[in-house]
Amino acid sequence: MLQVGNLCQVVELLQSKGVEPVVRRSALTQISVMFEDSNLHKQFMQLNGANLILDILHKALVRENKLF
Image (cartoon, rainbow, N blue to C red; front, side):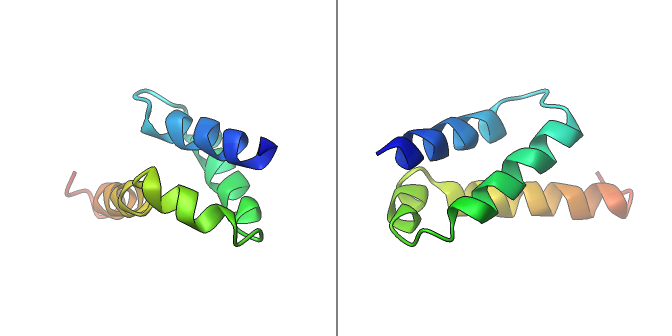
């Protein structure tokens, strides 16, 4: 259960406004490592994690292309 709690904390961090880019990158890296445990996939989806990641990626691409 510790990993589920950690996943929730990392997702909450990513949902926060004003998170420094280096912290956001670290949080995304942590999630990728946590995903080695397939038991966390369902919890991630329940936290709306897929949409969160897609939103982060979209914003990064738009900023990179200077459309944001």
